[in-house]
Image (cartoon, rainbow, N blue to C red):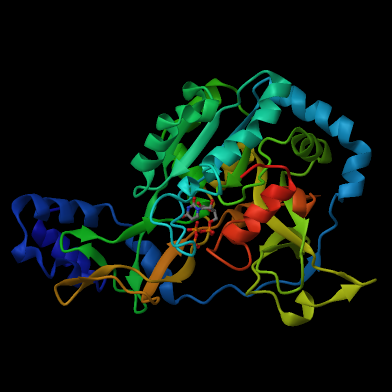
Length: 404
Ligand code: UTP
């Protein structure tokens, strides 16, 4: 679009301020800005003032408990190991987040969780993979989702560390798609005078980003049927766990989610529930107090927190591509141009638009809740100190015999 058409287009959408500094820009900058505007998804921002959907009736899920799983473990493992040996399962690491709560300027996976030695979160997670590859004698495909901001640094870190012993050609990187950011009134921010402010579109964007990157062709070529998606911030994450894979496949459910028993009613973790009989994840801030605190025989009724470790079927994921995932508004401190100056706020000043992986579970229609022991598999690193922090994760790693 040329300048005149872009101006009309923006005026139509109440976003003409994006051209406020156009006159000051160099030729190259003007071109860049027009290109950014052309590539911006304005329809997302239009949804800003639509009301959040009211939830239907919630009920608790029945999980495969740690005890149930122990009883059938060898059966589950046989099925999972066979699928892994046939190359039917790949893993997807979600590493496109901004990790703002940790306050670490680099990609979160580069954070040194070691005490007396260097041990990055990436390395720790890659070490966890070795147990599985040793059993199958095969390296599953590992797809790493990065963001526009952290892509180069992430790839370089993996390469500088020789992919932590994993074959380089089995690791593929792809960038997460972006969505515009805006102020509380819905005015899209400029990040620089000639750049629209764009941010990663939330962890639910992983599959469409993977497809847009062309990597789905690799999955097809290799006949991959299942994807184990996991977050970068759990250092006890067990990746492509054969028993989890086997249990999900044998259950006949469309997907599987590793869950842990909540430590307490107020723990800040999304809870896997049923909404009108279909799986859904209710975020901690959405859960009504009455349900959150409800107990039966001394146990929380809504007790299964998700660990961001899911198994999805590729065929079913392809079906979610047409039915768009909803965007959630996340209040964030967003650097932007204000009165001609770049400001870096410390308090939330606007919204980012995020799709969530949890909404994919709802799309699937059924989900196996697969309980794991939290002390063995759940050590999230969200904050610098306090709950779910570097300190608590280090403690749990030591308990599990990892030398820090
Ligand atoms: P979080 O929801 O904790 O977000 O991510 P975050 O951006 O890492 O951290 P905060 O909220 O700013 O402190 C959970 C997982 O989803 C990934 C993260 O990298 C992490 O593995 N994620 C999150 C993405 O890959 N892309 C996103 O846009 C958001």
